Image 1 (cartoon, rainbow, N blue to C red):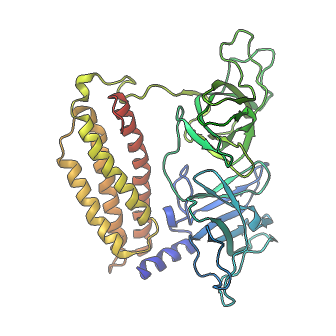
Image 2: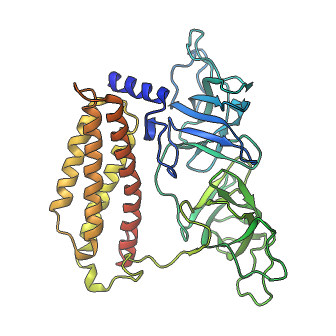
Image 3: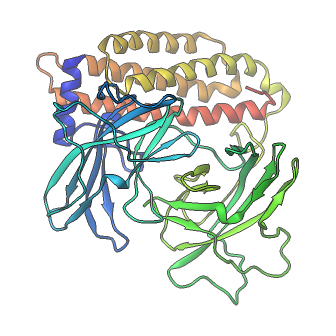
Length: 455
């Protein structure tokens, strides 16, 4: 696999490689390792690009005299900063953070390396226009932490996503997100509705010019055996530029039914719900609702990516997606068996695609080509209930696309082919398949709920 990896590395340097190892991700896609992420300040001035080019997790080439503490592991990023042609750019490794799947944010920590390393540690500096610097940044994280995302925090109240290490759909409206703290407290937190913009405000108190109101309906449930502090000030909304917005006063008419959520200590088993207001810029594209119950932890409650301002969204009973209504009993015949088999194949494809995205082992890619083909064939021969025909066709298309993408990667160096172009096309196909796979998982969940099936 060394030759394929070296070619992909070349594409990264040239700014040609896509997807998990590239800097040509489609607009709106979450960035992955290799994606050039621009930094634009609050005034709209672009200062440069930040790129995570490699993640060594765990990092094992440390100085053997200084291993990580028991229960910890080292992680090493290779990062590049490139200043715009007309602007200086502050490159600071302390602005980089890992986030794990529990929401904890991890900052730079010294990682001892041998004296003969080639790539130096990234140094804090002010870069002149057009300059480029790169280096490594070390982290120490819990041994069992599953790293999810890499963020750049150039200023307080802003987290810019540099790389999504576990791409896929996040929680949606209505999902109950389990939270537990270090003291043993447990809770379920959910966002059931987002009114964006919120227009039913007291007409005497409209939003300021250039701003809009947003209103969330949320619930807290103490699911543990200890008291739990529910606080609406722990809720944040995040926009596509990484800015985080906290609770603000939104004046509503006196006759509203749903009250505002109040800060309170909840007894075990208690549940409270209500609304929380926000004031955000008129043109802000909100991408998520987050819960920040403690310093250094940010838990995603609802993924709003793709929801444009002007739409009111709410959690509804899961349906088949056909005219927004639940399926009748007769329409669910055969659905459970189909769902179980399909969900297993989709999960396997997702696991393989995560391995494939690293492009580390040519033997694994070859094995996966065969397995994607087998999964697609099995999906095409199983009986398909009428309610699942559209989803079944999409599953086959995604499995076929994964197979085609890997086949193109493996053949990229054949005589007469433009290798760089072949790799770019293949990775674009691969990334598109991954996005469709996320949609499939949502449709499967909706179909299951519409038939009353617990996957």
